[in-house]
Length: 369
Image 1: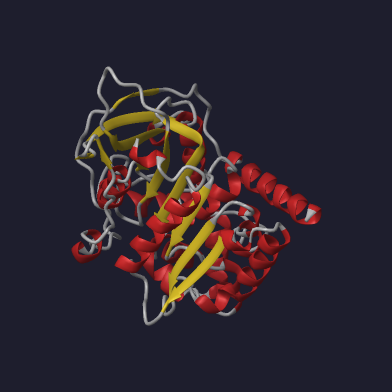
Image 2: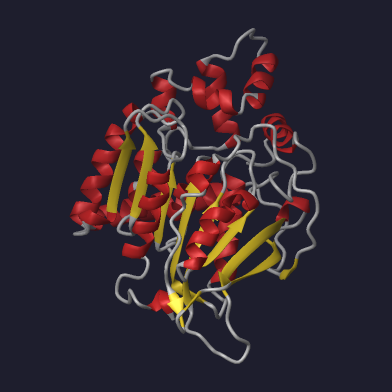
């Protein structure tokens, strides 16, 4: 077990090194009220399925024999210098009377998929808040209130390939999440030891890497987001993932004078956009680093963007690490039969059950306070 802990610390140190490698000038962490403006839906966005979102399980917790009322906050969190260093934050929580002091509540951070925004996570947030959690969401880099046009994310990915100055695919948002944790752990309405995180697709990847980087994330769930980038390159199973964000790969192919995007081009782009993601920071190393904290991975069995075939070694190693730490029930992998890259009501239900089981297991009644 000692060896496993040491390996996890080494992986975490390497991940933090990479996250810090392209940072702009650091500024004090500040929070102030947000002024809403037009939040562009990026052209890569997949429309949310209303039938799924409507089935997000709502809590039936009551206070004084009445359902919990909810209230919202819109904030800006500064994480570094520059426009993208201002992170829009949405918080939805049970409403409290100004004269009543309540105990800090567990919190769940909800992370959106490619092309979407924090607003698309409202059904999940309202489900958690109505169950007594404080629900939190942010816009990923170049998304939502941080996207100046429907092409903002695509342009940022191409610029990252051309200049190597930013890491808009996963890592820059993971940096923001760590700063978000700095803030959330200071809020009097949030229990700092009971902060969970869930995400969909890109949000699932952000959850995976944030949990590996920051042990303050107590419980995590990644929906249709976990894959092995190195395996996909070796087995040439990268096509569906690349097709979801083709712009930097096409730009790289043009720079290399190639008529088509090939495996060498894909590998070069991944290394430029997210250094180490195919080797030292790939899932066989970063997923086990989350142990012993509870982590649920829920994929579609036929998902071409997150091929289940590439996760065999990841699952074997991670299962062994959790077993060695004496908490085998803290890791779970579900591959939903016949399912591609979509979110289902089953995933929403499993996610809620995971948080209810692990985020406040010792005080199951605290959510109703």
